[in-house]
Length: 367
Image (cartoon, rainbow, N blue to C red; front, side, top):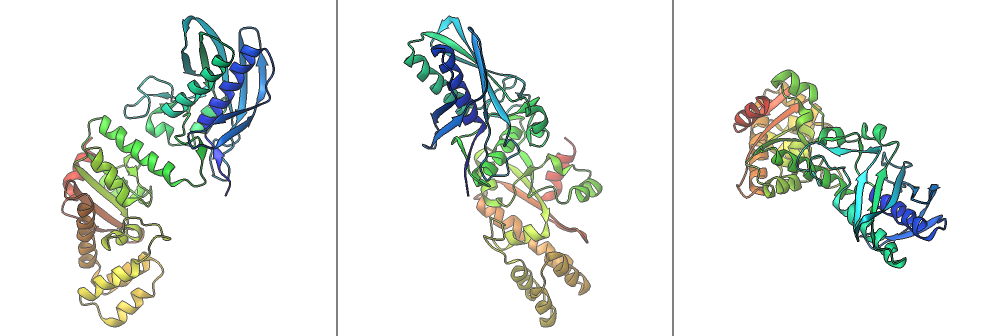
């Protein structure tokens, strides 16, 4: 699959081209920058506007084969010389670049959401051109993304506390299709943000599946939870590293039953022993052989739980599953976290709630 380049790379390329045109007086239609990954980025320079005192140009974001909502957007850089100081690159945001309104993100509250690595990339490329033309003065750089206000509505930015546009991001400079690291980075940002607000407890869920269940049953908005996708174990590691003390896992039985078997990445390509784990628990709780065979033949956990419900064993089996989920997650955290879980089914509602869950849930609901 084809990789792309981050908004940070686009901003750095546009800035380098703009300052080159400003200092040389010549138009530049292509520019090459170095990405932190070590892969050069040769960018086409678009929508050039030049005057004696400033230059503006754009680079079109290419996310490669990654389904990136920012792909196709123009990332602009407007540069000018600041004769009041020397040797600095002063970076600001413009239209479509969000501002940080909550703590725990890469930039401080009140700053434009242009992350540290893109800032370093912009500074490096701009100073390189300044050295080439012996320019001793500072350079002002304004990054803007005119489509960013609308694009941001399709991202996690509003939830994270970035308002008014998108973030200029990227740690490697390139976009890897369906990047695992991008998902893990988002998880860590959400966890860091919550810790920065002073909370030592957090709700974690694979996604928003069960939103209505949690609202109707407990009055808790699952949107407030940190979404861990399939990365159950790695999320535990991050929470422990950041100093959390308590975690409530809330999830559909189809995901969490895997954790009862010690599986810490619940993606089907990693492991899928849902029916084997459920059948083993059924045997332990004296479910007859014919019923166990039916469970083994099930495709979904909804079907398996319905079979257990019909034979009167669902509650005790799911209660033990919840205990095993908590035990395995606690073991992953080396005993440093108090972990509770709530397991539910779309058809049957709540299947089990561990004894540790009630206290953590109460604190979450009362926030």
